[in-house]
Image 1 (cartoon, one colour):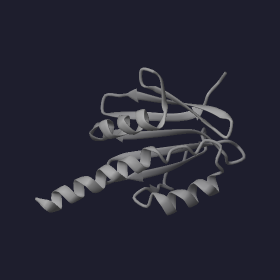
Image 2 (cartoon, rainbow, N blue to C red; image 1 turned 120 degrees about the horizontal axis):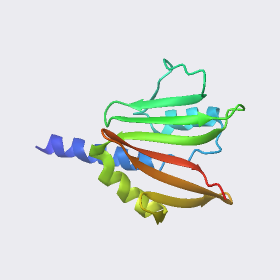
Image 3 (cartoon, rainbow, N blue to C red; image 1 turned 135 degrees about the vertical axis):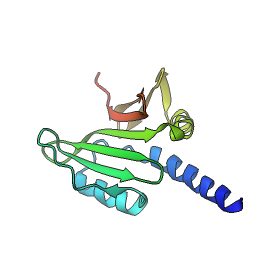
Amino acid sequence: MSKVFIIFIFLIIAVTEEVTAQNYVGVHKDEIIRLMSEKHRNFKLNKDVINRRFTYLKYEDDITEQTILFFLSDKGYCTLVRWMSDYSNINDILSVLNKEYKQAGKNQWTYTKNGKNYVINLEKGEWFFTVSYKLKCN
């Protein structure tokens, strides 16, 4: 039983660390790749995806069933982060969002970084939920 408890605690810590790590809007793709490999080793870059319409980095975590997409500008800077997760993680994610950011409405939070305002939206789907981070349009 202690092994199961330790694994459960590890997964909660991993999920909690990941939600606070998504503030990569404005960061260059080379820096995102470096930070993800250093700080989020359970996420692996998926290079198999080719999309001619959008440029993005796709990271996947098989342990907690999460995917992070970093959408990039023509110059390689992140303009939007979309993080998809299985519903088994939602309570932990909501807890961190409520703790780290200012709630601005139902399933919406805001924060300021380097003098810029950002918005976080949580969208519930049928099989998974998505947390999106982007620059707030004024």
